Image (cartoon, rainbow, N blue to C red; front, top):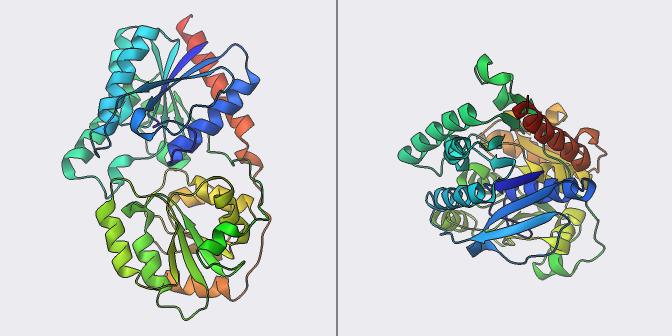
Length: 363
């Protein structure tokens, strides 16, 4: 079974939820199934390393980093290369890249789509880009043989005609290892259990502006750490820096490996301030580290079982301040029920989707 993967910048060590998803999914799947060949199309400007994974192969194509052009250019090239490779399935990740799925269908190739998020809801996109993404959504849903949703609430918005080919499969928890090292956090002047942690790409939909404004109104000796890289949203990052003119706010940049383990292992509280999410993998990571959490009240954060006092009202600064004060008054570590978020189970379900897609085409 040969499957081409389109819609990720690639992996390993490349920032992004789709990138983490693909790395965990395909390394888990290929480790178990010997009859599987996965071809991942990556974008050259982002590639850091090319380790060997069982049954997984990389094809690195030229790409730009220009917002709005990057994904379109790469997805078209990758689709054309996939057609030459003649796979059993092309698996598109997200609705934007899947705008080229009609080409795959034209050449008789089966299409699976993973719908990660409604990108057109993100504030970073202009009016024209949003219209294009909405058109891509219609094309992708129509042309896909099977559609995987990581967010069941997004799936439930679909017309009944589409639901018969859709399935909800959530994201999973990465393998974590608590770190005893402290050199990274000490390099930023951080102390164990004396900082709040937020993790994510620096983009407006993550709500870091709201988080910083709320935190600066609190009289506390805790610090706020934001771990995430800046790509196209440099203007938004400058806005955050202007707001955060305080030594109590720490930006670590894109952080991975043991450095990220140190941040999770020694934090007092994790906050997800997002305005929009498909399925927040960083929240699962924080829960795996048994951190207490405070999250914005959006559909995606209800995909995971949390308590009422774990939520603050979306875009409500006063509600966020109240939530932070409540959490800091009683720092705890928690054990969560995360049995439904095992990557091996998720890989098995996705593999079954592949088999069913191919079986349906033969009958």
